[in-house]
Length: 256
Length: 338
Image (cartoon, rainbow over all chains, first blue to last red; front, side):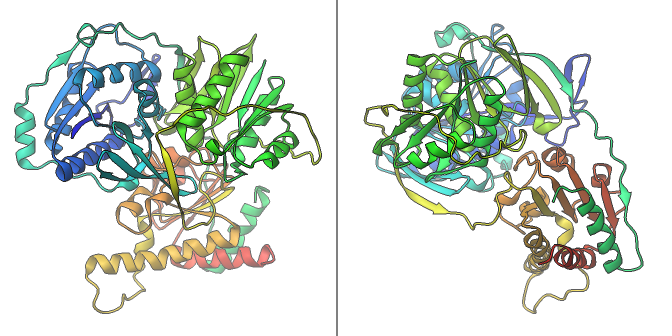
């Protein structure tokens, strides 16, 4: 089984993110492997454990993004590739999907491509489906259960109404929701292996493509307006009195 | 502007955000609603009642279950032939995926999970939250059709005008051997959906801290903690059912195994925007606040007066949730005549 897992490096979810002079800043918060992508790496490792094969982790970014790739290697990916090119700036999701699809092509013979459901910075959640569409593969998004039977795959997709059970043929694209199950921590051996790993870099020329044009522009990024609320603390002699006052206050808001 | 609105539904039941999306489309001009499925002509009638001027109805067995390939191919073919200016989708699981795939087919882009928009001479500028609502970004799209998904509950739902009609046009579904087959469904536990809820009552790590409870004998420390948490979440659920509310949870409560992940509110859970959000035993970690900060009225019940959740709250109670929450349930039952 040849497996690719596409990942992204993002600011830590506990970071205080603000806009300063038009630029997004997360202070001294660390950059991490996108938390959703840990589920994708976990799913890839489980498939490798069940069926054998290799896992290649791929990301797009600058040299610093090798840290996220190392995390994937430490968890259990076999190799990692950084796609780095000065032409890759301000990419929208379809441009990102084009580049990742080209990388999956170049990797060659891929059976399964895993993605996290979305990145916690842009929050778009579009790249897995878009990459599948470009590749012409089934998009098995939000796959909380994945079972391979021969060349067929059976997944349970997490949807608003519960789970949708679908079957398809490989190769296919998968995106992973949190209810897939907890991703593993890297082992000590894994961390040592990752720290010594050589991570090759692919340019767009090596992928055989030119930079895809982005069609979405973001002219302005803003801080969320602060909520001008002053908390009114409700007090009283006993819980019933407090509850009575609080219920009256909430009902007086006329939103129930 | 020639606007198309995709009506997302499950077995003929539209998700409410679909009607909100028609409402937004109507502010920009005429609306053509897209109703895809099998045996769903009734849904086309409802789309007219919520304001659609025209409905393109693709009623075919090949569309009897949502499958991205069949739905995207059907939609893209129609759009290529009829060249709408704008495609609007509700930001549901299906709507988001379909918007992304159709954008690939039509060589355009998607502005996703939008919370406000303005149109100037046919060009739309949207605003949407990023970093789970820690920031906002404006976006524009340089290609046609402009494709947008709208966040549920961010826009008003139009009034249903019973009996209102419009132009019904039957269109063909895509023909082809689509590789994905739908085998069936397992439905969730039911209850009110978090993203559609007007009211949410959420529990955090604090719900497991009731010192007055003695767990049954024979449980280990972790099992005892879960047992305590279940007693706490029972109180949260009671308040939720008194208010017809959905039950939410913090990531800490989900990670500790108190409630399933489907209840998680926050950066790696659901982003919600109810009219009333009641946080019980939730201190207010930044990733939780990001997921609920746009709620209209936030109420916090916590024993720690310094808890960050109080900075967002309109009303706060510093106290023991095991006493306050049941008393609040009783007060609402009495006042709301239940």
